Length: 421
Ligand code: AMP
Ligand code: GLY
Image 1 (spheres, rainbow, N blue to C red):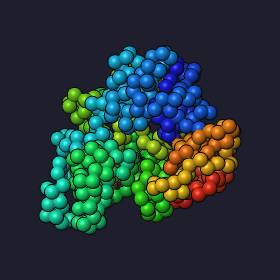
Image 2 (cartoon, protein in one colour):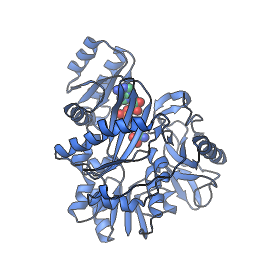
Image 3 (cartoon, rainbow, N blue to C red):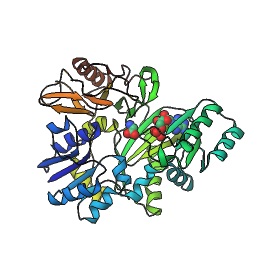
Image 4 (tube, rainbow, N blue to C red):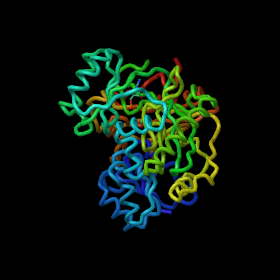
């Protein structure tokens, strides 16, 4: 089989390395990919949002499976376009991807189908939004842009003034463009966060092993929110009992709700959960694998990923048994100094071998470029240094040992990934 991966980050690298394990896969292409991915796949110079050229490439090259990994092309209808052209593609169509692309949609869905989530109100103008936060007078309060905002559209306001500023910058200054035409204002919840990715063909849902992301830039959860600075799997807070409750009260009801709405979801559905004192609640849905959640979940997958993708496309997920390796995984993200704000690119990375890895670890490349035989930094998140172990501590020790071998100017990583406080 010839496979085309759409995307260019650490998640896509992890998906490609997993696809390489499949005896069915003969050739992997990645568009647009990155320096590290170039060692594992043939790079295709087409942007992830260039639907027309992506479809043409898939047809011309007789691609058997297209894997659309990022949120934007899913929301923009890349899977629909592939299907219309007769190309088999993994991922939700645009009608289903709206579960991530519109928070107003997902909040209303949860309300309609009694899926536990934070209480909220939706606003289409700043005046009534401000009146609402002033009259409620409760802080912290959470202000969310409706649409996609590169993971930055959520503001946790500690004061009413901060909430007003957030409303104005989203709705008046259009900080996130049209994504801020509508906003959700919701109740602030507390409790440990859990990421659960799940395979679903629209009828059956099969949760993967759990994980925990570390979203803030600095140790002790300080600094700005990022795309994710590191992950562990399994998530220590996610007991079998909680997993059962989530399956019954959240996962199955969500799949059924999407089916009832005429938007059956096929692909990987990401449940961002918070284990509150009043039970597990949904913080957000993503219509795709998380990044860097994929980097810790996929190395634990025993079953052939191609078989799972095909079963989902053909709507027979119920018939396959998905198996996982015991033990634990940890991923430490090495980022460019300054990320998630401005940072330099083009800095040489030292300590990687010619394949972009180091002994004892799996190094997923997120933002790198190959120049001759040198790897250079080319993004905010540069590498996801990942290791497996029998225990979480063993995985963490191995990942941090590998991190210690890799250097580049101004490299920044968190030293407390996997520490439970
Ligand atoms: P999101 O971009 O939706 O994943 O939100 C980013 C982060 O904001 C989440 O991972 C949570 O830590 C936090 N967050 C979002 N909504 C809430 C909420 N209602 N209460 C508390 N924290 C929240
Ligand atoms: N790591 C969070 C996300 O992929 O959205």
